Structure formats: C-alpha cells, structure tokens
Length: 380
Image 1 (cartoon, rainbow, N blue to C red):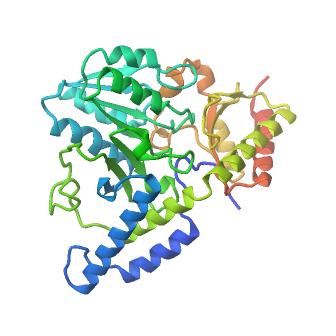
Image 2: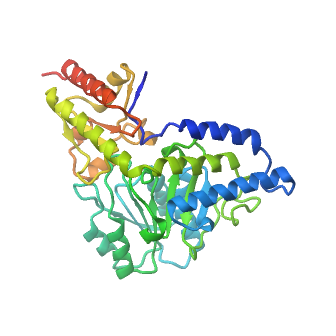
Image 3: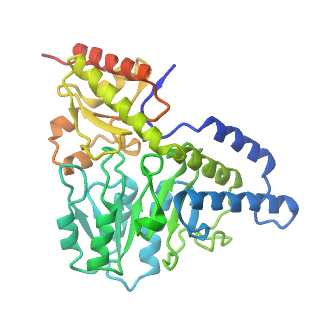
C-alpha cells in the first residue's frame, strides 16, 4: 500500500463524500436553472449545500461564490475587486510568501499599471508586521495575504493584520488565501474581520473542480466569467449540484473533529522527528514553531530534495519538494529564500504533509526509508 504524505497538494476524496457524490450524479443531473421538478431538485441541493457550507465557515450563505478551485477564487478576488473599484489607489499589498495563484495574478496587474508592495517575511515565515505598517502609510486598493503557508505551514497573524488595517487604512479591503486553512485550524469568516477568503475543495477531501470565495456583504467585485449571470452575476456558468453537495460534506468531515485530529497529527509529526533523531539522521526543520502540524518542511543537508523524493517514491512513499503547482519548475524556493534559508539548504528540503488518516506504522516506515536513503546517497 502506498504511504501518502502529500496532503497539502491534494487530500484524497473521503469515501463517504465519494459515495454521496456518485449518488448525486445519478439524482441531480438536471440544470438547476430549469423550472421543472428535476431542475428544482438540483437547485435545492445547491441551496442546501450553500447553507451547510455557510454554517461551517461562519458566514452568510449569500456571501459564498462557488468556483472551480482556489486559483479561480484568488483571481476573482484580486482582479474582480480592483476592476470593480477603479478609483482606488492603484497599489496592491501582498507578500513574498504567497502561492503562485496570487503572485502570478498581481504580476499580471503590475503589467496593467498597478504598483506592488511585496512584504518581506520574518525568519519564522510570517509577514513582517513593521513592513506592513509602513506599507499602510499610503492608501492601497487591496491587501492579499496567505493565511497558512502551503510550503512551511507558517500561520500569518490575521487578527493583528486586520487590526493594523483598521487602524491605518480602514477602507482598504483584505483578501486572505485560506486554501490551507480549513481542516488545519479553526476559522470563522465572521470573526476574522477580513473582506474575502478563498478556498479549495480538493484540499479538504472533496473532488477536484470546486472551490469557494467568501465575500463580505458590501464588497463589490467585477465578474471574471461572463454568461448566464449565475451566482448574482459574479460567476456565470451552469452550477454543479453534485460538487456543491460534495464540498459541503467534505467541509463537515474536515472540521467536525478538528481539535482531536490536530492533536493526532501533531503526535505523528513528533514521532517522525523522533524516529529520525533515533536513527541518527542529520536533518533541519525549516517549518517554524508556529506552523500547523500538518505541514513539515525539513531539509537533509547533503541530499537534494528531488533526489530524496525519487528514492522515497521507489519505496511507494510520496512526499513533495514544495508547492505542487511549482514542482516542475527548476527554480529556487521563493518562500524559503524570503525566510533567509540558504539556497544550498533549501535545495535539500522536502515537504511532508500529514493528515489524521496517516498511521504511526507509516511514520516509522517513512523515517526508516529516509534514514536508509541518506546513508546510501549522501557522499561523505
């Protein structure tokens, strides 16, 4: 059996979600915009799923836009907001620790004449708040920051970020990339104080092809997909009732035992590091102490991360060297670089991302495989 340690790239679909999704495909195949009984049944499933999602994320159901995934949600949030508010200062505040969906979107806007403020990271992977406060001395159209970093697990202090915004530029909207948040730490849209939050279904155990953007009431966006005017005209396209139902179910499963599962994952992480230490493996944890336990970036000096990845893959153990969307690009890791990690050490890093589905036996087998690979491949 494979040992899967790449949950940050994609979470396997929960069996219960898969079974319900397949049933929905048979039952709710009609167009939810149709007014006949089958269309109304499909529409009811979307409405019920939206209500369930709203309860889990602590928002209003009319604050949810369903999308195809995290990248679309981030594009809609950033491009949609600046297009809908052209009179605002053409300045966007983001950071050096963002996912490619954000960095590529703001880079595109830079070509359209927007100024970018790229906040530096502290050594712990979080945004430098002094630099953030300095950036807020001038008005900006939008602030877009990642909440839980997808590579290191570092958690940006959203409460302090919102507090500084409220104090210094209260009219500037905040979007957070919450793709890695749900299922890894508690989250309430109402309490967070942000204006938009993006997420992705396949990171929480739903099928690929669905995500969400939460938009606080009073925030105006320009549509990025035009057509039939679905979802209040913000995201045209025939809605997908089975995927909406699967998302709501997966969100419930990902959050209903969150505290218990976080303790379990933290124990697995601790076991892995303990086994590596016991087996005399030379390693350096690059994830900061405040990271969610599910994401562990760890370097093995003297052994390239990609080399170790292939060695583990040969043993049917699956990890990554960083963000899945960037895994085929032969570039230095920009997040680790922004944290001040030397390039040589960063090149020896792998990301091990865990979930409650992993077992202690898998962790021991992984540590043993890493130990064997290091002994065999590191030249002394």
